[in-house]
View: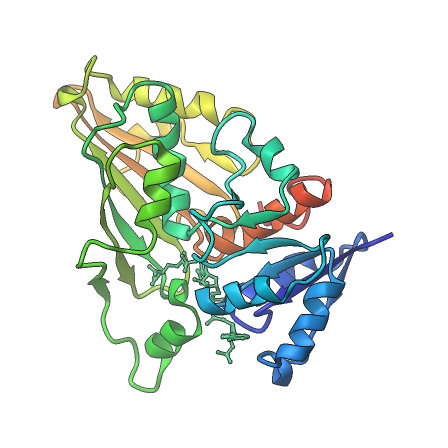
Length: 314
Ligand SMILES: NC(=O)C1=CN([C@@H]2O[C@H](COP(=O)(O)OP(=O)(O)OC[C@H]3O[C@@H](n4cnc5c(N)ncnc54)[C@H](OP(=O)(O)O)[C@@H]3O)[C@@H](O)[C@H]2O)C=CC1
Ligand SMILES: CC(=O)N[C@@H](CCC(=O)OP(=O)(O)O)C(=O)O
């Protein structure tokens, strides 16, 4: 018997990436709705209720509407939008969050796929809070650059229109109330919201997420090697999250937004200076990979009891 999947929003940027990863998987069958019917409520309702697992690749309001249209007790949901990431009754879809979280996900009916920025941020920060290296009340900053496909069809059209890209690089989130801050705060275990300073680069895909730390001011004055050791221990054996060996990052003069390419990997690096007591923690990922579609397929595999990396681009 196959597991029946429906991608609501399957004709958008994330939905197409997910469908690509589900092709050639005989253990799954995809329920589809014609592109012309993508906003047809009756067609969506039928598909939502016929599926074992639905993946919502929709704006927040439409994602809430889809959930409300499910009128059976069996269909399980993975929502790629921001709508349910800190909502009661939903499990946050970052299996690597902490020991035991993967098992929590496997037993969940409603899963909220993480935002792309929080994936990099939590990958770096959560293990440090758990290890007691980063105090929960530490004033944390996170910045970085994302490819423009992070803004979906509308931002792709803006950057690829007849006029050409509007700019090479722009900062945004200037009101300091970006929609990803609540999930970053809750799942990192920090007591206060991190100061989040995102930017968009003129690249289609890819992300570089950076957390700078003044180690010399932190309790116990951890060294860059201590930080690295905590990350390496947290992700030991992971086929998806890699921690750059310290000797390799010490030899690097730069790191690019395209570092992991179009893959579903999350790469974490510690660049530090033991003399100055400072470190720059850098996560690189594909916003459409581990930042969206890769994570959704990983969660689907976990929910369906299938090998966790099936269909992923590693
Ligand atoms: N792009 C990325 O890197 C990431 C995206 N996400 C999230 O994933 C979700 C999808 O994003 P993305 O694929 O980029 O967005 P897109 O804009 O590329 O695609 C959204 C799709 O949803 C359809 N849609 C919009 N409103 C409705 C509606 N009311 N009913 C039915 N279908 C509708 C759109 O159709 P139409 O063409 O008619 O508008 C389109 O096909 C969003 O919540 C986004 O925030 C999460 C992580 C990363
Ligand atoms: C470049 C860009 O604009 N990126 C998007 C985030 C993409 C993402 O993770 O989306 P959701 O949280 O909506 O799922 C943003 O910052 O709003």
